[in-house]
Image (cartoon, rainbow, N blue to C red; front, side):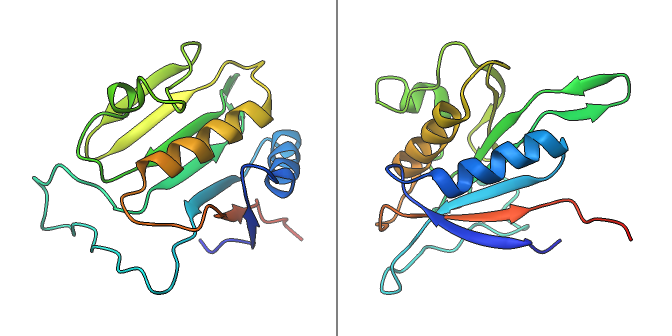
Length: 161
């Protein structure tokens, strides 16, 4: 599926992404993917391919995903934050003493060196806090120099005619 649009945000100016996230909460559908903006002159190491099944590393440039709470039969799946990364270690201990440590109120669903991190923020967590943590974590998990700006790819549900 192709993104319906793309945005550029910073930690200091996240408003465009926050507006999209609010709309997705209202629609109870969609998701965003977020990655750091890499300058054109920076060489990015190749991500291990399908043949690297036993590699302990994911992509050198992290890819974050946020999904809103969504209906799942008679219940609602909570919002989730996921990050694929190439640090070759678990995110929780890696970020544990940094400003991007995983908030203690989050439920960690997955923390795997190759498959990445998935966490569930509390339902009452402000979107500003959730997005800021995701941007800060992506910033600290990126293995190559980046600009400090983030590319946000928006995947909105398609409307049926």
